[in-house]
Amino acid sequence: MVRPSETLSSQFLSLFLEWYVEIGRVALVNYGKDYGKLVVIVDVIDQNRALVDAPDMVRSQMNFKRLSLTDIKIDIKRVPKKKTLIDAMEAADVKGKWEKSSWGRKLIVQKRRASLNDFDRFKLMLAKIKRAGVVRQELAKLKKETAA
Amino acid sequence: MAPKQRTRNPELIPGVRKVSRSQMYHKRGLWAIKAKNGGKFPHHEKAPAATAVAEKPPKFYPADDVKKPLSNKRKPKPTKLRASITPGTVLIILAGRFKGKRVVFLKQLTSGLLLVTGPYKINGVPLRRVNQAYVIGTSTKVDVSGVNVEKFDDKYFAKQVEKKKKKGESEFFESEKQEKSALPVEKKDDQKAVDATLLTAIESVPDLKAYLGARFSLKAGMKPHELVF
Image 1 (cartoon, rainbow over the protein chains, first blue to last red):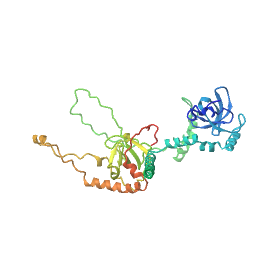
Image 2 (cartoon, each protein chain N blue to C red; image 1 turned 60 degrees about the horizontal axis):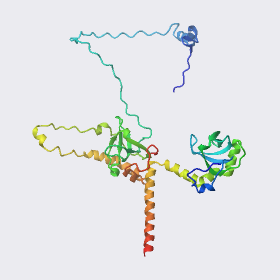
Image 3 (cartoon, each protein chain N blue to C red; image 1 turned 120 degrees about the vertical axis):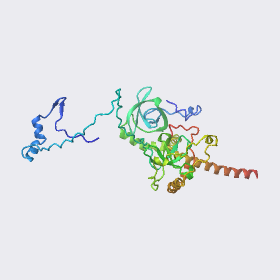
Image 4 (tube, rainbow over the protein chains, first blue to last red; image 1 turned 135 degrees about the vertical axis):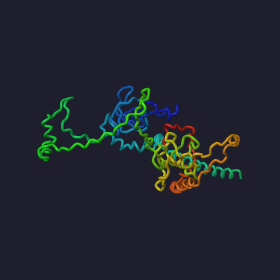
């Protein structure tokens, strides 16, 4: 049993939000060459390591410390063939679930922000100012209404 | 790399080649050349040796042997232009009077410096030379196909030589030359000509004009080595 990463859970949440290392558990790699990839735990080697597989990588072992567990689980038997794994991932729609989850969405936003061009950052700044202006106008209107 | 040439006579180990002398004679077709030329190798007469110019003995022999410096045939090339910098790229100037300004790159001059313009109306940067080392190349490009920059080269930017010579003491006590030579009208016209086409290209892209008018600066949390430009 491994507790989810600190970013997601406070001590309070960890009481009932525990995800287990099990066969079929989807995890995010948080260190090393495959950083940022979603992988599936396909077997447990010993107390510290798991056999891990993903559609676009060679099946390999990883230390649990390199994995951040997610709440997605797929239905596979121990060490499935690559094709079975891919089919199971499609059936469970791992990619879709991940991109809809708040964790997944945050990562996508982070990536987008990091890839912004200097011109994009400028346009972003203009957009933020514009939005703040609109918000402030509405706020001023509401204030006037409550004051009146 | 050029495709490897077929060698007729490869070296098996150093000093030992595969094919013998007589076999090479046959392989090279020397027999055919001889046959074509009637049993002999083709032969040119030697060109008449140019008659040696009579050298006069020198009038002066130096007392000490003077060392002759080694000859240097090196020709300087213009600095290699970074791949990210192409005509029309928006550059961020990092040093000097215009530091932080975003500016449009026009072409690289023979000295290696980059010819750059604001455009002047947008951010006050005129046609100017800038060193590649003091510049960040962004990935934003402006369409410069309509701009003619043929006439600009390093000589265009050379300092005007002052003809006046110091006449006497009175010059020292007088206030320093107050008339800073105003920009000649033709330079202003050149600027306007280049900027006219540029401005239409810039205005066709939303927000680009404001972008070029704003200065770049690092804000809190920006890490230059992680920024994508």
